[in-house]
Length: 264
Image 1 (cartoon, rainbow, N blue to C red):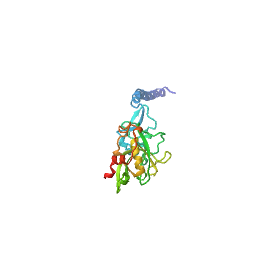
Image 2 (tube, rainbow, N blue to C red):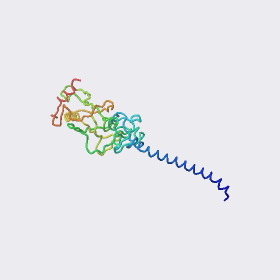
Image 3 (cartoon, helix red, strand yellow):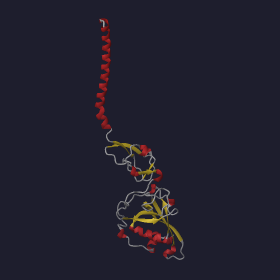
Image 4 (cartoon, helix red, strand yellow):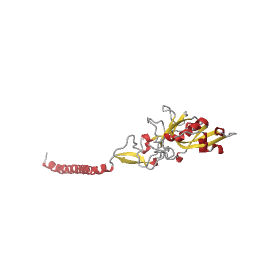
């Protein structure tokens, strides 16, 4: 190699070294910046994003995307949802308070808001009882009564049952806001629109005596209430009937004294 060629190649190699050095410097800077910012990023995204109620959601309502939001939880509950779209359009089985994670056991497809429960016991508050009443398509609103619904009970009875002569048929509302615990037998289907033969409802032991008297002496039918009319569920004994022992028996005089069939 001649001296002239050697001299010309030195500037070229120098420029190459400068370019390589610059690239390495940029890579090193970017890496350092990334490492420096890593704790900050982790601090902003701690936990797992889950879907929670943006505000109070009432039972048996179709959940909209606007009812939901995402939040980070360090210990998300089992069956939690990660995206709003997985929950929007479903129905709430129970009341969901604002900020509460929406989990799979709290929702159901909107067309079947409440399906058969696999819980081995009935949710009966202290001092209350579960009562099973007969139903059918015409009696039970075409099979649309589902677990968690509230029904109103109407009784049709001839006043001759109370000793009135001549007797006449009278229809009266006898119970309101009766909570439905189960629909049909424990092994039966509870899909919306399926007609079953029984409803298991919640009431006091005292009211159950009146109900059984009416079931034996009157024709009973049920109305399905709007969820907007639901009252709060009991959490303890009723002041008028503290326990089953408070039920002292009823007869025609007691029933007529409570609802006044003979004066309507």
